[in-house]
Amino acid sequence: MPASPETRSFPMRGLLPSAFTLLLALTMAACAAPQPADGVKPPPMSDPLPATVLPAPATPPRHGAVAGLPDLDRSCRIDADCAVKNVGNCCGYYPACVNRSAEPDPKAVQAACARSGVAGVCGFREIQACACVASRCEPAPSDALPLRAAAVRRSDPMSLPARVDLRLPDWVPDAIDRERTYPADADKVALAITLAARNIDEGTGGPFGAVLFGPDQRVVAAGVNVVLPQSTSLAHAENMAYMLAQQALGRARINLDEAGNPCGPYTLATSAQPCCQCYGATVWAGVDRLLIGARADDVQALTEFDEGPLPEDWTGELARRGIEVVRDVERERARAVLAAYGRGGGRSY
Ligand SMILES: [Zn+2]
Image 1 (cartoon, protein in one colour):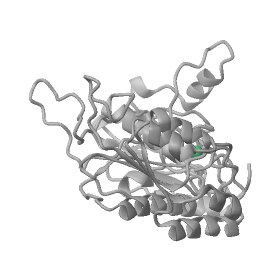
Image 2: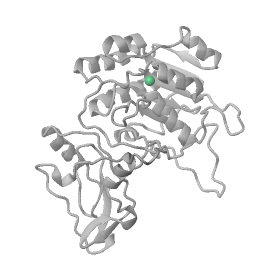
Image 3: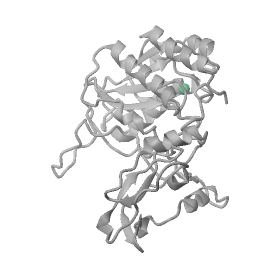
Image 4: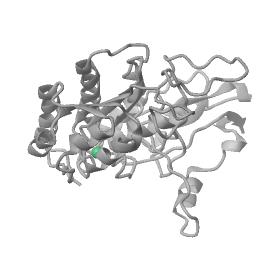
């Protein structure tokens, strides 16, 4: 998919919170990640996809500020009365300390925001624990750093940026069955296309999806375009899938084990042909196969995304590096998603 393309347009409604730390190390593939030495069982494949979080600053609208919604019960007598729950805000996921019996309705919050035309790119801080402070549930002292402080720290001109946090939209992990196998190329690409379509519907990024599959034909990691919500031009679907897989597996070359031996095949399925940026990433990511839905010509004909320049013999260059390229897999279905996006007039940027 697109280079500056994925960087281009998409509706600004319901943008997501930012940030994710490629943390969870799931490993299910052949060249599996190092096994726990103490006999601890590794997480099952049904565990969440790597997709996770870190604080990402900003000033999210407060839950109570959304017109027409009741305030949640934050009362308490002791710490145990409190719990961290996703209360939602105009940006999406938003954790807060509330009474354990409170029943937040993030979707209602989002709907209220949509009705009032409120949306934005926001951040949040993860909350590790809550405490009962003056009869009100509040983040525990270790988490008490106000959101503002995170934002200030990030924008402090004297502070050298030294960390990258990226995050997939909250809906992605739930959209993928980690137990399922996808032996057929068409099914692999179909999943990537489904993610692309959902990313449009959710308003969480551009019309691109990618999924990385392991030797067991199961999903290792997935990605969608989150360039705008994450303020990162690199955050194309393929790059997100590569980075998440690499972090989850604990190695920079996905298909080489710790001893440097091949342990694939690993396959990246993408809804659209990689842009010049994702093409470059593909050269070194460590995949054995690249399955592509729509062509770059489709992307540029149906949307305003710019794919950027590729080597004339780009498939040959990959083949010489041991990467098999299969094009036009579920192409019409992939084109339909792009066409829908084009018709929807997603904003260009
Ligand atoms: Zn790209």
